[in-house]
Length: 92
Image 1 (cartoon, rainbow, N blue to C red):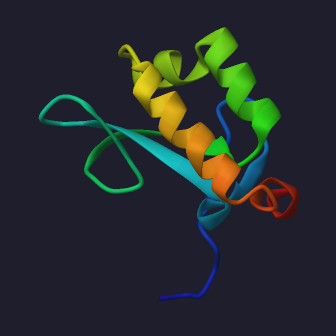
Image 2: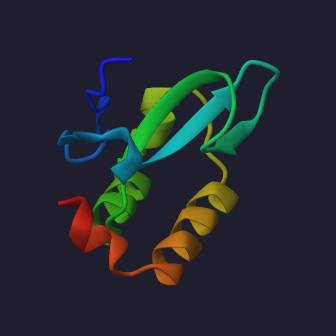
């Protein structure tokens, strides 16, 4: 392996960041959605309150994943944000 970081783009703010600094939302091949683990179509989101709210308001995850995103996914991401409020500051 080359040691270079893998960059991904936030679907909301379009910022290019290391994949470890973003949340991954996956539309699974078997159907349904998952966070962080699985095979399927993925969308990445900053660990930031403004990006999360903007993604919910403008349906950015739904457009990127081409499926409906349940409120439970947004609730899980909101809970992660509450658990580590400093994560949003270090991602930028």
